[in-house]
Amino acid sequence: MNAKDDVSDIKSSVKLEAVKQIVRLQFKDGKTKIGDDAVRLVGEVVQLLIVEAAARSCNQALLCGQSVVEMEHVEKVLPKLLLDF
Amino acid sequence: MAFPTLDSFNETDKLKLTVLCDVRKICQEVGSGLTTKVSFNKQSFELIAEMVWHKIQDYGSDLEHFARHAKRTTVNGDDVKLLVRKNESLRERILKMTEDLSSASSSKKRKKDRDSDAGSDVGQLEDNPIGNFDIDDILDD
Image (cartoon, rainbow over all chains, first blue to last red; front, top):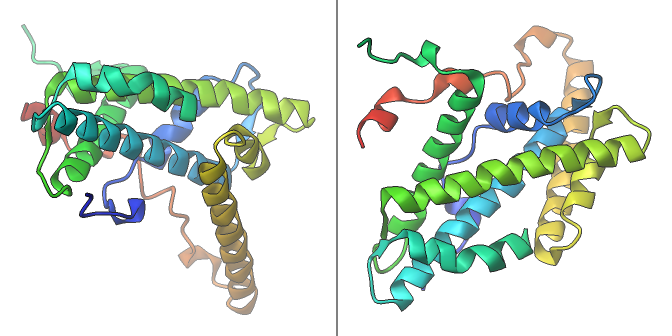
């Protein structure tokens, strides 16, 4: 069904610097740091999370016979998505 | 009333906007890549962005706990591997990426040893500043 079968074909990506800042905001201990490799890996996980959310929502919208994804379609796929990530 | 500028947002708002922008771009790309073109309405990608925001925050506190449990103060790749242990395919992908990253860094180190000009070796993270998102992207809604 997908014209773009590989996730790597998606050119847009999350900003690693933003991911790093959000993660660092959660650190309770001021001494905790995060390495560059770890930031890249978390960025990849987040990228996959977004692509998966988008793809499943699209699929849900198509199943309902619509070509615009609405909030209800996202809501429908959200529980399973959160279990997978 | 003064028009709000980027400086009037606090750091959290800026980060949220950055996430929203990225989510919107990725959603549009995924939707337009399908054989039947699908578009996203505003609420739907805002909901996805909200979910992603909370998820990154969860990852943050989890990673800190994993690192502290391993008696480290720096989060590294092993903590991320622990984070994705429950999703088999995601775990395989992350393991593969870890190998790629470690082989890339060792070859980079070799290159650095050979060619002592370290000034030209700028990391990928530095040229990606957080405030660098396109303001037109936010305003054209």
